[in-house]
Image (cartoon, rainbow, N blue to C red; front, side, top):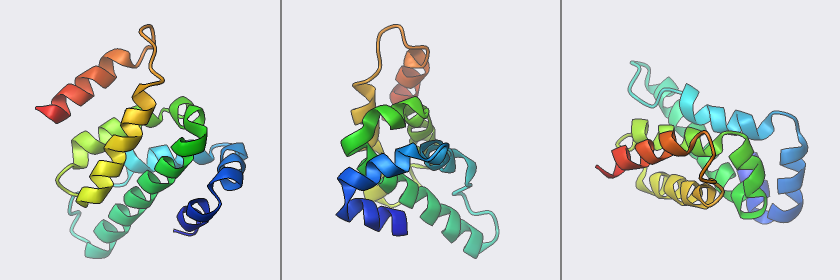
Length: 129
């Protein structure tokens, strides 16, 4: 949450600092796919997993405003699409909208020859169905 708040207030300078930390953007992206949002039997773990995922989405949104290239290169689009397809019913509506907003920003970076184009189209199609 602290990074989210700091980015919200100082997005220009903080975004650069965050992407300069090796593995930081990748960690936010991976958090979307490694934390289970389904009820795992432990309400505290479920709540914590949902909070980490939702904060990661918010951080990625704030980073995309200034440094979309770094999020894209960190496999952000694929992680967001996986998150949306796997957890659309388990997250708050604003987090889902934020995820789709970030995904749309990142889709603009896909080139016709990008290896993730086919899987991205399949993920978006699956979500829309």
